[in-house]
Image (cartoon, rainbow, N blue to C red):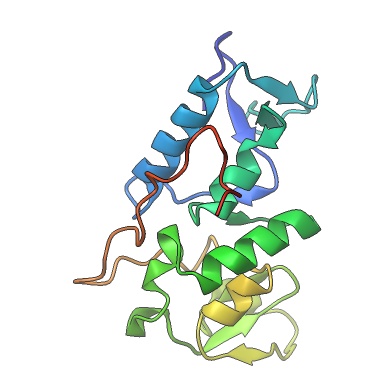
Length: 183
């Protein structure tokens, strides 16, 4: 995302679908509506940069953070963080099949999957070939996602795009300036 001064921002602690994947356009549109409800502030004020020169931070509008809004809508998932609030929002989005989680009941999302401390992988993922270590199995993506694990960026194009599956699940039109936590 570009800031008004031209700097690029990567929302820290979450991951969204890559451009062209199901849910990517909806995540971008929701982020634009969130910022338009502004004024938005950068958190932290002087965030660090990643190896690509992007700032690693979050945006806040009216006491809500963009990361939380995207996770609550099912358009992002926790990524390498231990934020309990984001975990709770992700668990609810998974169980309610919101956004990209609407496809979790499709056969393409069924296991087996190998679990690490932070992510889940296809059993043949090259990142798992380390020293003969055994990784626990899951037989679907719901449990790993609901427990806060992220899909592997190496072996899983996430979210999957199963034929005939709804593109995003429930409508996002309900999100307004009331925020994503409103019933």
